[in-house]
Amino acid sequence: MDFLLCAMKISKALTLTFAGIIVVSSLVVVFSPSSKSPPLKSWSKRQLILYCERNSLSTSGSYIDLLTRVEQHQKSRASTG
Image: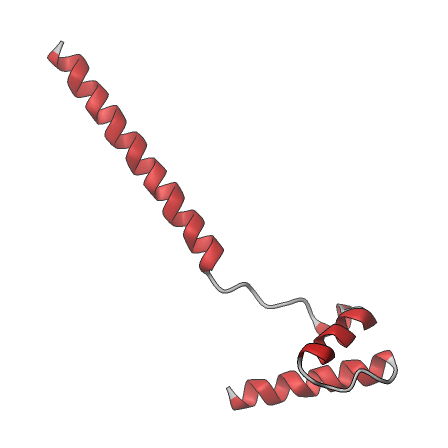
């Protein structure tokens, strides 16, 4: 009987340990900074316009105009930190 009780306690401890590991690893994934966004050249014109709207940039012009504007904005943000 003591062996069974001991085995059950060990089993419960291992289960809780694995559950804890899963919770911690899930939190790390959720709260870790995401990897770099896809390259700007793969963005649609609509995505570029949304970026410009969110960052108070002009939304007029062609796809190339928007792409250039967003690239310059991101470079200036990267250099200022």
